Structure formats: C-alpha cells, structure tokens
Image (cartoon, rainbow, N blue to C red; front, side):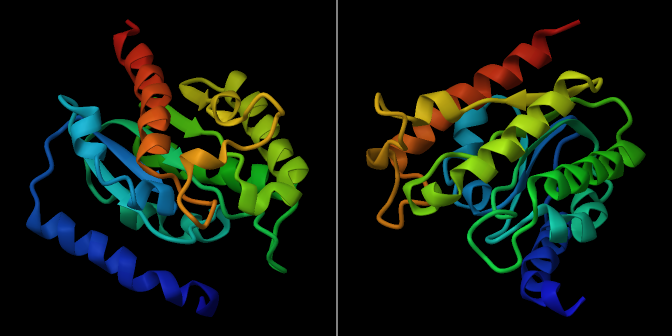
Length: 206
C-alpha cells in the first residue's frame, strides 16, 4: 500500500473528473504512464473519436493493477489503449521480463471482467537513450507482450519500435525532450501516426 501512495492524488483526480465530465459512450480509454499524461494533443489527434485520458507519471504494471478498477470506473468503452513503460527503468525495484508479462496478463484479465469483448491495444515500450543500457530486458518485455497478444482474442500489440530507431539501430534522440525519455512534439506526431492507424484498423474490422 505505502509504495503506491505517491499515485493516490492522481487517481483521485481521475475520479473527480468522472464526476465532473459526462464522457460519451463508446469512448476510447487511454491508460498508462507519463507519455499518456503528457500527450496534450490526444483529443485532437484522435478526433472524431471520443477519448478518456488517464495517464500518470511513473506508472508501472505492478501498481496500475491496484488502480485498474478505479480507472475503468463505469465508463462505456469502445476500446482501451495502454502504454506502460516503467517496470524496467534501472530502479532497484525493476521486475524481470517474465514478471512483467505476468502482471500484464493480470491487467488484461481485470479489464476483461468489466469489458469482455472490447479491443485492448497494447503499445510497445519505446526505445529511449536514457534507458538504452536496459534495452535488452525492455525488448524482451515487448517480445513477450507481442507474443501473448498474437494468441489472445481482441488483444493487439502496436509496435512503434522500428520507427523510433535510427539507421544505427539506436533511439532517435531528436524525437525526445532533453531528458531523452519523454517525446517532443515531433515524437508525439510520429507516435500518433502509428497508434491511430492501428486503432482505425480495429475499428473498421467487422
């Protein structure tokens, strides 16, 4: 409990928004860490689809499964899009790739309890210069999630990684702000192209 206290104010802020805003039915819920929170153009980028933006800094699967039900609330969703990138960050609390996969599966099962059939779109963890020394483990997480998505109904993996690597196979530093962890305007524009295309492909499917 105590290791999640830092996130309580943000989760409570989400709940307050739920009482203040009448979100349309069939909205797309974007859930995850700071890259979702800092996506300031999300509403415009996804128009005419209605979105609910629920990202908070530092989110990882270990803690988000504690808050999933509160974030889902009673929203009537068309789709859920998830990006979580902090389970392997160089911290002493880092999980193993296999443990992250187990947490990811648990999260998916939580969503399925309330939304048995909506598409769940899982965005790959972005390669970044700031965490490049841990990339082999992060890539393993991506590979495991992708494999699980391929064999699981209505679970889709959005692979953004190739677009964010340069010709030398390293992160494109020009698409990030100075911390080399978070996207800049150009990075978000490129991210959006990939993610929106994947979303539209699923929405068009019969």
